[in-house]
Structure formats: C-alpha cells, structure tokens
Image (cartoon, rainbow, N blue to C red):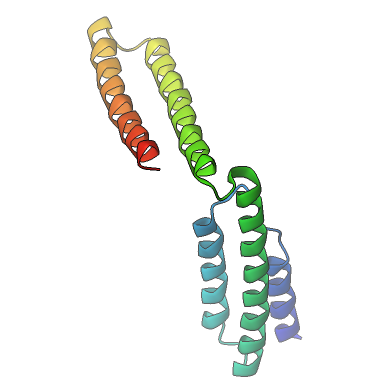
Length: 140
C-alpha cells in the first residue's frame, strides 16, 4: 500500500503541465529534481525506478517539444526572430530601469545626494547592459 501511495504521488507530480513561459533550462532543472527524487526513494525497487524514469523521460521530451514549438512560433528560426528576441530583452531592461529609478525617487529615507548617486550608478549599469545587448544584436 505504501508503494502505491508513493507511485501515485510521483505520477501526480509528473502530470503537471510545463508552462511555455519557462525557459528550457528551467524545465530541465525541474525534471532533474524529479529524477533525483526517484533515485533517492529507497522504497522503490529497481524496475519500478526504471519504469518511472522512462515515463518521466517521455514527459520531459514532450514538454521540450512543446517549448520548442512555442519558441519557434514566437521568434521563428530566422535572423529576424533572433533580433526580435534581443529587442525584447532591451525592452525588458528599459522597463526594469524605469521601475528601479522610480523606486529610488519614491524612497523617502534617502537624501538628495544619495538619490543622485544611486541614479547615476543605475544609469551606468543600465547603459552598459544595453550596449552589450546592442552588440549582440549587431552580431546577428
């Protein structure tokens, strides 16, 4: 009965759909954690572990294929798609910069000079990151 409960819990954990919003690395890290849990479970026999790992591998392959399709749909495989991806990163960086700048402005505990120095440091970091992304875009 105990093995049945463990197997049921593992299957429920495996049956969760992987979101297309996650990166492929995040997806694979989640599966690595599930593989580790199967390996560390001393209550499962060798053939049971092998069967669970096989099912997990099939599910992981399916989720990776779903991610690949979503990625190709969003960005395509052409240079334009890769450039669009870098442009999206630049847009995200700009939004992050604006939010952090607003947080500094809204912080009532900072003096005027502290706000100014933090904004300057933020701007330098933002500009350097943006320059790296622009160079990456130009390389495409």
